[in-house]
Image (cartoon, rainbow, N blue to C red):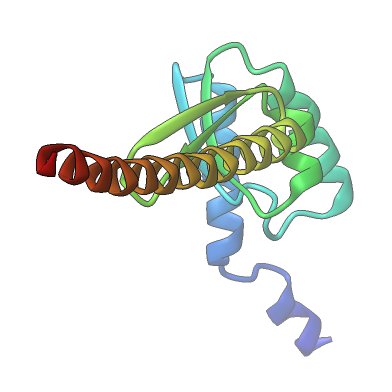
Length: 139
């Protein structure tokens, strides 16, 4: 019984503190809510509740998450920070973002190779025209 007495009031853990603080931040409904991996350390029931709550959040929500399902169900716009330190905005959920970004990258690659072919063609034309100019000036 002495052992049970020691377990009655454990000191609050850091996780409990973080969850309490997160819960308080949700219910005051700030105009800008920043969440970093909000599903970490939550059980399935809590994740489902959080997903439903955030999908209807009336203000601006910025979050990072490794859960694609969570992002798909919560996000209606995606911001991508590029290597050039530019923010690129995509409409739709995470799957739409991935599909759109892949299409853009494919189109850019095709345009690059087309440009390179045109440059090579123009260089070849200039080189061949240069020989004609030289032969005309000799006349």
